[in-house]
Image 1: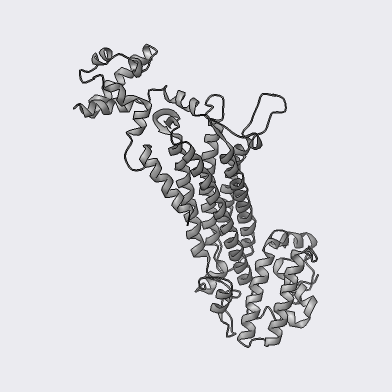
Image 2: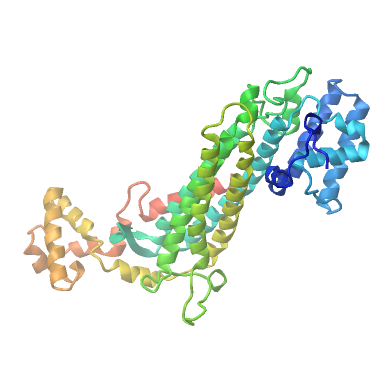
Length: 458
């Protein structure tokens, strides 16, 4: 296949170099967006009289046929084409002759690829946002089922204070809500059209960039043509948002892995989201959660790839920027796959409330509440803290827990202790008393669920 730039060169491109230079194998994903951009451009060229209305209509009709033929499998990609843009243009010329060659008037592949990738990522981002909403919904539903499930809350992976499983799950719902909002913000900056910036300096033709931007659903145009063809900030922003999202999924996966172990046994993942061992018949491995955790590093790598590609590039376009697509495509496909698995994995998991409650009864996680009891009786908090620390040390030495101590024993540590202490330090009371906004108390958790449900209804 003759290269479009063949006139300047006396030699054909080396076969190995040709393959190395080609991007068709990965940018063919953008065939639909490339054709949509070309249709908008052809329509504008006809409207502005840069080409005749008949030529414009002929080009638009042929482009529609090419799109249809690709989608129904009649037209296969030619591996000899340098990229998806040249494949479409050469197929167009093959079908309608010299009229097809008029399409590239007042346009460069530099602004063409810039508009294609924005259109493609805009569509894919909408799909990822829908998947995030599905996962938030799964977490919210599971939380609603477990508002009475008391479990240990942890710091440093040590039992700290009693909370509800609902409260714990909702923390991830709020993380994912921020991920959704980050993608929204990135979309706003991405949704400007670079079409018409040409190679770098604009064009001598009287084009209408606002017309093509509107036709393609953009909010406006990129104001500087150099910036329009060289900007990949939106890729970096999306990759950053994907990385933070994957970090949240990885943290959730880590907890699912821990909770499903025999040491915890707080949950059981459904058979359909676990695997067995090739040698140990008793094993039920949380492989899907482990894969999500593992694939997080892959998305981080894609972000670093993009930042490294861009860090030393002079304006405007450089061939290095061809590397943008593989990184961002890999990341978004990985994110989509992980989100698609995560939602049903959460929906189908069993919650073992009794095991959570048993764990919560150990580890002195009501110690802060004993200290608060003394504070309410008039003791300064630091003094109360020290007193309770002494009680915990006594319990450890005597292999017991505070709830099992008699009032008389408590009085040996402080005269402020009375029989009403036991009503204050039960696990149920410890949870119920957390009345501050955002806490694990019943009303607070109910408010959080309502907030998330309201977000899901938007």
